[in-house]
Image 1 (cartoon, rainbow, N blue to C red):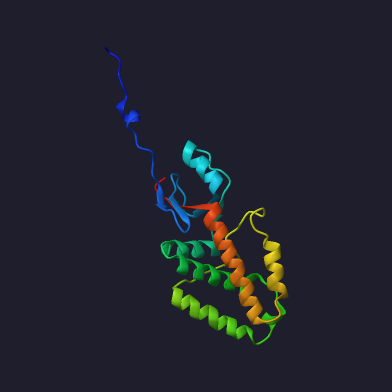
Image 2: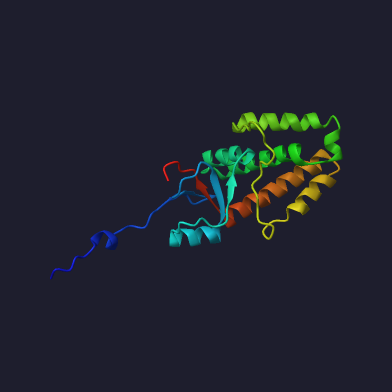
Length: 188
């Protein structure tokens, strides 16, 4: 008769930290972080089931990637706009990190105009040191070297734009299917 039954644990609801399931899955982090976190879906599922204190392998989206994820998150319910933002990110990445003979000509101005026009239209800006703006993807899911080779060997701006569009669309789909993004949580 004197047995105490803990009703709190019995009726405790599982923590629902899902913000947005599609096109990209965003969740509220249960731990203190000032950056967005990118994690493989399989590791996220394990984390969600066990609620461990140990954070599985992940990417902390800092620097240029922080501006990219903020723009993606702000448009999380508009698949088309998110894809355009990621395409613009691919154009920015090409300007920052790619060597291509076409980009050494005065045709480069056309790419600058395209980028500035899209930045204005999509209301996205990168500030400060922006060495990496595209999100990392595990090598077994996407061949970044092949993508970089396509960009390097593009002989015209049209080929370059097409390669960037195709590459960023493929990356977008992989990020959608294989990754979960945890939002910053300053309260822990």
